[in-house]
Length: 316
Image 1 (cartoon, rainbow, N blue to C red):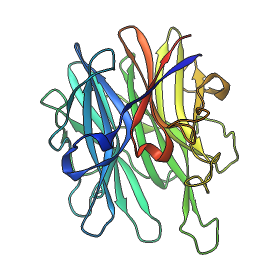
Image 2 (cartoon, rainbow, N blue to C red):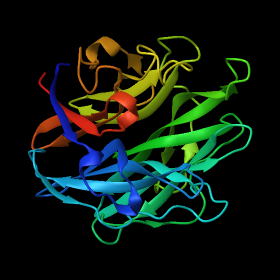
Image 3 (cartoon, rainbow, N blue to C red):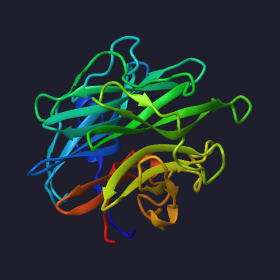
Image 4 (cartoon, helix red, strand yellow):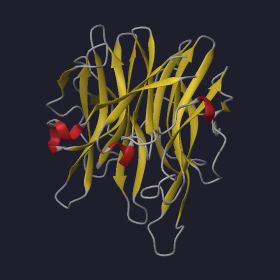
């Protein structure tokens, strides 16, 4: 697979965003309409204590993905109430258009004491063509369980042959790698299935083999079917030192499958960082989609998408 990078297409610092947000446009994900493409992303504002809250915004592009038509000016989806799983943020949001309905699977964040955060997956729907979303309920549709005890999130949902498939991540451990430091997390990619998109059955199966080591962190799977093969893109990194040490941050991984269950990893057929650019230190949070007969890949670059996201197109 040969990708051509088209450069960064959106920088949040150059635009006015809702909820007082001014930085970060993380995990861009699309809804493709007849005459435009809406790209949702997670952005940030600080609360009264100086800590970040993650909010959802969107930007509309023309079908060539070159010209901005609109940027959201109002709240797209409200954060959770006191004590809810999404009280402190939603990141990411996965919009799904199926049989005339627009759904959104959200990753809700809430702060913890012994570790920094806990996450679960929620569900919302839109009644105004994706401008805003209303939650199905205050709780999650997929969360921690006996063998996946924490950090369930990063849902990506597709419908194949009437079955809803969800690829997501789940935590395998929290660890204090350096004495006295804040614990860091390790997470892997799993999947679940559903008949209605609401009630999910986890398959308790790790899908992607490790490349770096057993503590490799794998995040944000995205899947597309091309001919008879399913293609998954995701990001992966070292468990520690990834924030500041070049070479330990996120890279884009790739795997393929013929049955949606058994996946073969082959990162050499994916896409890598640039030599010297906005994505030279890191590539993360991929999203693959089709538009006007072409296959595109949205992704974030250095500093986890603090300064926006870029685009690549599949040439081969």
